[in-house]
Length: 286
Picture 1: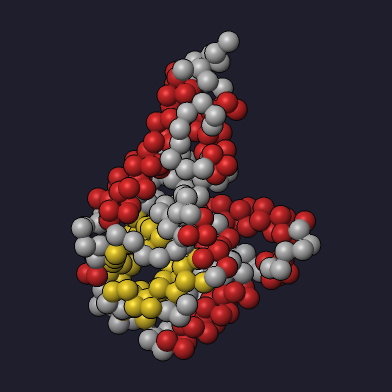
Picture 2: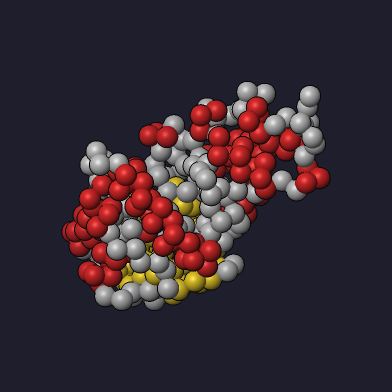
């Protein structure tokens, strides 16, 4: 889909590969690009779409976290627009290269994947402007806030708040994509026990009228985020309860009801058990 304006000078484009969103935030000084797609080749299409939109030059980039589908277009944007600053949370920036190399190894091993060559050809460029808690960017006639609300999908998630437009770009802390049946991305680097608390902070940055743009899928409202927070909260509570009862991690998915398909939760359970303090676990039931 082409870039669509979802609020005053905020445009979102949704790309078929991963159903990923790239967002433009416009100001008097130019455009801030939030996330850059999954390869250099894919990012060239995004750059062409930005130029076709014709609303100004790119003056900065934000990566909402380190995963390749949000960062592998960084180099292409710099090739097209010069050495613009790339902003990310310090944890995400530190992990971008390693995360990208892990993905490249997977694509290298899968010779049948149609995107293999473009992923392998992509130069990984991590963010060079980092922060730990919050940062405000000045686009000339509007301010944009970058906030690290806590750990969830990864350890370095950030959200982008545009106060004057009441828009929040949530990255993969919020998942809407029908391709995943709106199941959050509980991957091998997630923090399932902290994710609900992180979304409490995200909710505190919104109003009842806010437009929330997820990393994948269609924009949503505050009610959607609250419902997803509650479902993720059930995942976290199930992990705590089962571990406290002495249920082994490998038996947890079959031991209770979950709000999401169990095949999507293996990493969530494993990571949750690993992240529990020793006092939160009992010896396995005989």
